Structure formats: structure tokens, C-alpha cells
Amino acid sequence: MNWWIIFITFLAVNLDFFFILIFLLERYNLRDVIIGYLGALLVLVTISFLLGKTLAIFLPEWILGILGILPIYMALHDNDEDPTHTEKHGPIITTLITYLAVCAGCNLSIFLPILTNLTFQQFTLALLFIAVLSIAIVILIKGIGNIPLIKQAMQRYSETLMKAIYIGVGCYVFWDSGLITHLIHLL
Image (cartoon, rainbow, N blue to C red; front, side):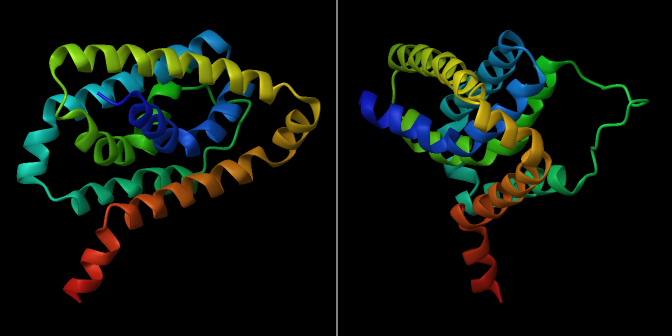
């Protein structure tokens, strides 16, 4: 098992979500964001491990690109704050759902080839490693998000920036999965 590959894969898969974590940490407390983020990440990594070989046999990678519609929908769905509007979900569930919507396609398509060849013992160690990385990243991002200049910029531009990131992530999932290339070849 190559720890560097797991580390680099973790960073690559989650890089776009690190920016979203700043927004979530501005809105929710650290513990709730860690629990939601960690829960969603561990679910997706486990699914990648358990179903990796099966998905590779029955579903071509480009089909996973359809998941790119989820973050685009979230960006276009008007979710502005309304004082009379009460949240449907708590902070843990909101973080978990946000991560699943934004990162499911990337996680499944990128972690699949890396995790499917691991033994159960190796996977358990990799899962523990990813959990530690996840907690450390959220704490680090919380610290970065508390820098006054970044905090001021986030308060001013966070809504627009978050929507732009969601749309960008959705388009990236379309492209990276091969969905766009596949559709072009069909035409």
C-alpha cells in the first residue's frame, strides 16, 4: 500500500471541498462540521472499496459523470437565507449532504482504482489514515478561515463564490469522468 498515493488522492479529491469547508465552518461549529465531513468521506471511501470491482465491471466511468448535475443543481437552487425560513437539517446532516452532493462522483471514480486492490486490513489502515487527515484538514481550514482578511472576504463574497465553486465542480465532474467526451463521440 502506497501512503503517498492515498494522501495525494485525498488532497486531489477534496481540494475543491476545502473551500466549501470555509463556508460551512463560518456557519456551523467545528465539531459538527468534522462529524458531517468525516461521516460522508468515510461512507464514500467505504463504498469505493466495497463496490469498486463491481462498478468497474458493470458501469463505465463516464456514467459517474452524471453526478456532476448535483452540485450544479445546488448552485442554481435559490437557498438564500430568510429569517422566517427554518433549516430542514442540522449542521452535521447539512455538511454530510453537501459533501456527498459535491464530491460523490470524484470520490467514487478516483478512489475506486486505488482502493479495490487493497486487502481488508490495508483498507482499514487506509480508512484510519483518511479519517486522521480529514480531522486535521478541518482544523487547519478553521484556522485559515479565522484570518481577518479571509473572514471579511468570505462574508462579502461567500454566496457568489460558493455557487461558482459548485458549478465549477459539476462541470469538472462532467469532464473528468469522460462524460463529455463520450457524448461528443456519440454525436
